[in-house]
Length: 194
Image (cartoon, rainbow, N blue to C red; front, side):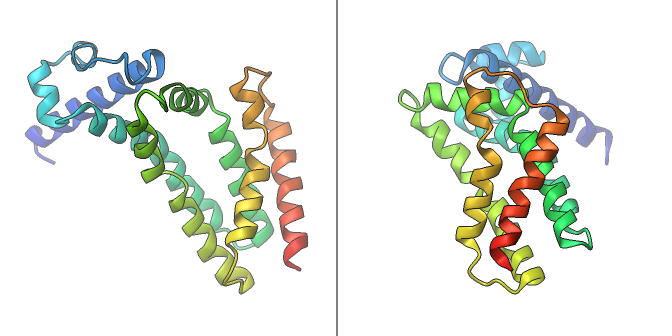
């Protein structure tokens, strides 16, 4: 990568980091491109060269938040033992969805839905479909299930159940509690397959 490309990537990361910080603390509607540019230590003109609109910047910010999770989830599903693969996937899935960053994102979406529906549309366009597709492939290959959509939906619903409490500010689950939750939900799923 050339020095120019490295500098571009450095600016891009600085913009996305600043945008994430401002979006999650101030909300989408209150966030300004001026504030994001200032925090990223660039001009507003430079910001618009990288991201022509606030919604595009928001979309890219959401993609960045989920990128690391998506990479790790595929690694879990590659494990040889199907139950272990699903449990490690489920544990990571719950940890991600209960993380402070994800809870802040969910709160932002809830707060902004009526005033700025485009933020919810942006989130949904990059959201759960990728996860479901990866899981459908896993269930087809490992269990021979070609119509696994309903089972996956119910399993993910069980895994996400603790998120309601987190959104309301209840005490966070410990790592051990998350792992136990993942095991129990996965064992219920597997019992329905046999």
